[in-house]
Length: 237
Image 1 (cartoon, rainbow, N blue to C red):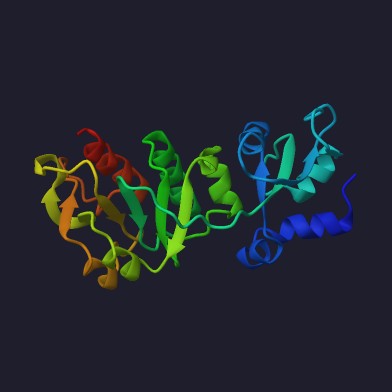
Image 2 (cartoon, rainbow, N blue to C red):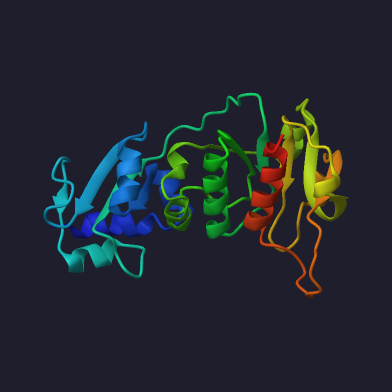
């Protein structure tokens, strides 16, 4: 049975200020929870239907109780709270993906999965980028958050200190399919509506773009789709 105070705590974690205040975030679904249990993340509490996660110290809940604490339209069989770890600031050398004010949780979740797929261990984010522990982001990562380290920082200061060449995704950049891309570089992706900010643009050394082949009036690609195409080109070698 879940108490009123537990319900209040869990539902409050939809907001960033309460996640930071309690240093906790929500993971839903058996597969996602297993991913975090098998990682370095520390479990705080686990709520599950009868017969689920019998190998863990679990608070058994009814379907009605699970619906009260779930952030999903169709609740999964379990929900867990994990501790938010201290940010790891050390960045290993190699290709880096940088996000400038990406605001949509689904986009960030997809980009975290992208980093996981391509073996990119660190994702550098502006301080205005959506919180990676937002429930929608966590759900969208499908467990990849356990293998990708996110660092939130002042991008202008960060990029000023880097020795790697800095590339940025722009509509008027050089055709990426005709560009000679280095194996080790920094790629900056901008905000969904406004692209790379003016301040960060000053740190970009090479603008690249994905050419449009159709006659559609579509203004741009989704940032996560664009990121997948561009990262793939860098990784082709």
